[in-house]
Length: 341
Image (cartoon, rainbow, N blue to C red; front, side, top):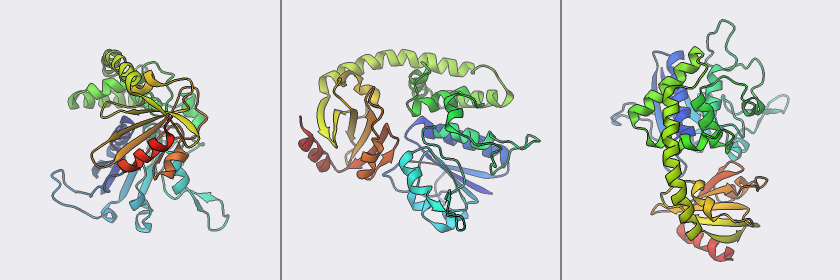
């Protein structure tokens, strides 16, 4: 049995989604061969190599199941021959609106195009964990295709009523801008600083603890967070100085934006020192040598704006308050000239 996992490799929500899927699929199908393919929008769809040396390719129809997590892959999802093989687990508003739109042949009511679960406002890694654990069969055996005993709702995640590893909850809440947990941002810095061995040890400890019913997070998670706080303290000071000096303001698509070239420095946290009361949203950009990668974020207190609608206009997508798109450098110049304040 061959199983593929295509995951968003640009952030830890996607990376942890892959970890969750691999963990549970290995338990469900111990004799299966599982292939993981990291991917991000704007890159060619990954070739399905069957070996780690990347010397032998196979067609996507050769897989028995294809898990697409924390993103959507239009080229594959548009293929009728793959529809019954795909399990799609995602939380991006624009993608859900695009792909969950089939109507039933008799009732005419909306029917999901794919197996899986999609909830706007809940991180993919948390959805992945519940896909494999929510609604277990009465004898405790996991079902490879979930038939939920009761609806899996966004409110259950918001209220933290679900069993899941602390690593998955904290990382997942950070990804959707739920920063109630004071450790959320520190964990991100800590995760980036881990070696491959340390990362593997953390994931294994957290997953084992969740399955065996541990009541507290693992020591590995505490250490990663502690290290993250030390790094964050330094980075925050540097970021505030940088954004205060280099951020500027434009008016674009009816909103007032704080704009900053973030280069390879980081995410929207880098912009905090440049945000002013009049700003509705943040426009972070960087040039990769070929095109401009733009990320749009809510400004504090302006969460009512749906920025994903703007991202879709430029061929991108994402969340209401965190989304993005790619444009040629000349088009970025047009935006800046037209929106100069």
